[in-house]
Amino acid sequence: MIDPSDRELKAAVDAIYGDLRGVRPNKKPRQRRKKVTQERRGKKGRTSPVIEYVRSLGKDYKTTQEVADLLGLSPNTIRKFAKDPDLKAPSYVAPFGKTVVRLYTPDDVQELQDHLAKRHRVMTREEYESDG
Image (cartoon, rainbow, N blue to C red; front, side, top):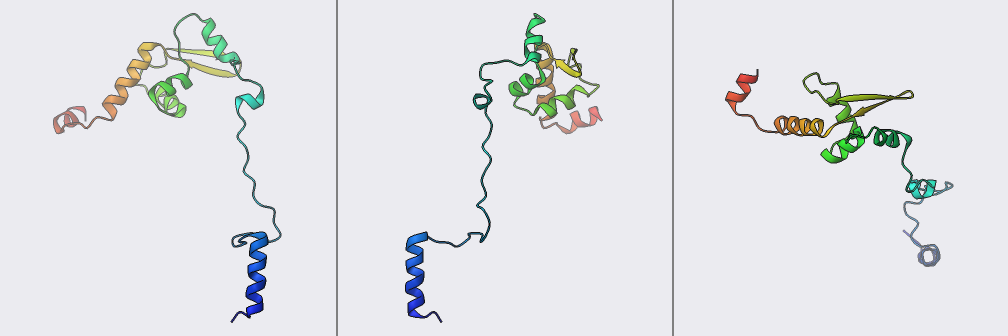
C-alpha cells in the first residue's frame, strides 16, 4: 500500500520530470543516427565518374541503377538477371578501373520488361505443360 505522503511525492516528481516509465536508469538515451544526404556531403549536383564515363560513350546506355529505377526493382535483382543465360541483357559490360559497369540499351530494358511480364503472369495449364 502506498502511503499518502508517497503519493504526493510521486505527483510532485511527475510534475517536475514527467512520466519516467520506460526510462533506462544510468544509461544515456539512445540517439538515432542522422542520414547523411548528398547536401550534407557537399556533393549535391555532382555526378559520379562512372556516370560521366557512361554518358561519354555517346549512346543511350542505362546503368544497372537506372534500369532498376525504371522497372521498380532492386539493383541486385537486375544483376541477378544479368547472370541469366536466357536473357541477352546487358549488351555491353564496360570495365571502369576495378569496377565492372553493366550497360543496358533501350532494347535490353524492353527485354527485361517482357521477361518480368511473362514471369509474373499466371500461366494456363496448356502453357505450363508446353514450357515444361
